[in-house]
Image (tube, rainbow, N blue to C red; front, side, top):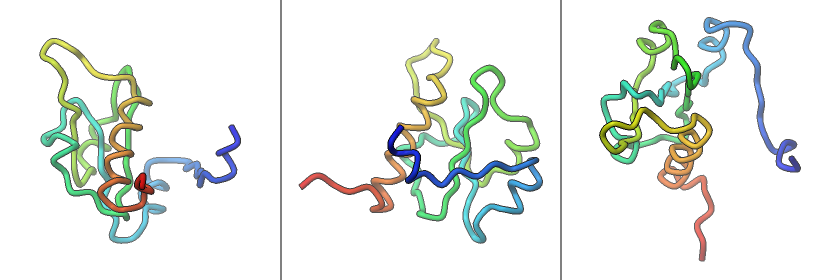
Length: 106
């Protein structure tokens, strides 16, 4: 993709290293089917780190417990979840809109 040069990609050797590398004062915001709040009702901050887990298993309990917020995408009853990339794109778009980091159409 031609957008790759604009991405800030960081790989972490472990969960501990990831936590050490998170921005100071930023919140860890987890997207999870076990979330307590709908993502559209959450007040995002520009320093938030959005985290998604594997489609098959989500995140380990340790990661779930470490999150500052656990958000859910409301679905029609009986549906399991969305594709993780779709879910991340939806929530990232809302976070960018709320924080003013996403350019608005004129």
